[in-house]
Length: 116
Length: 109
Image 1 (cartoon, one colour):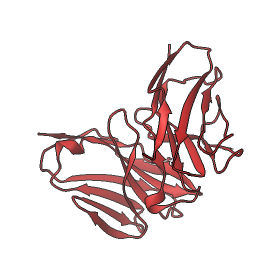
Image 2: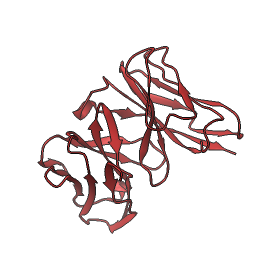
Image 3: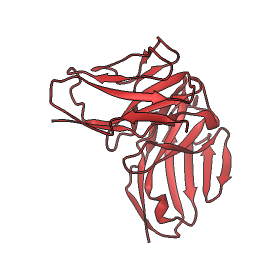
Image 4: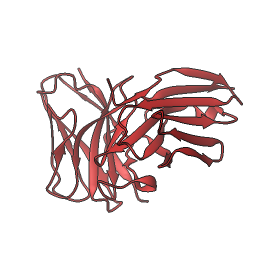
């Protein structure tokens, strides 16, 4: 089955610790994205990557870092510099950055991060 | 002012009702308009997409775009309890999706 997997589904961390969220896709998509979702705020773009070894900051990149060493993988690290990290994190991918219509972004199931 | 505004709800309707979900936008450069459906604790899934002004129908769902008013709507006919979810409008700008806040819909049996 083709799709996007995110792990783990639920993650708990102590304040001040860095944590890495996994995102893997087997859709052969070039573009990948990370969003954060908070109640009443919709989805906000953290980072995106157009191709391997390239990534760009989104609207709320502060306190986050990413890498794109493989086409299939786009892990997100939530660092201790992120002031309010508790949220639902969604990974997405698309054939290309400019994909539209039916090829617009496909989303993974999400990871709910709670910082205690 | 946000580029995309969406009534946050929550919206509660009885089964069989017609549901209207709405978004307004401020940037006339937006060209592609999407509606995503998100069930609780799941990732969003693309429900409908459209490019031009007018109506696009898919089963019980109709997406409507009015570019002159910068207003888009999603209508759900004969709503079912399985339609209970959060509905997100989204628009493409510079290769990135800009989302509304999402409207939480509950359809009561």
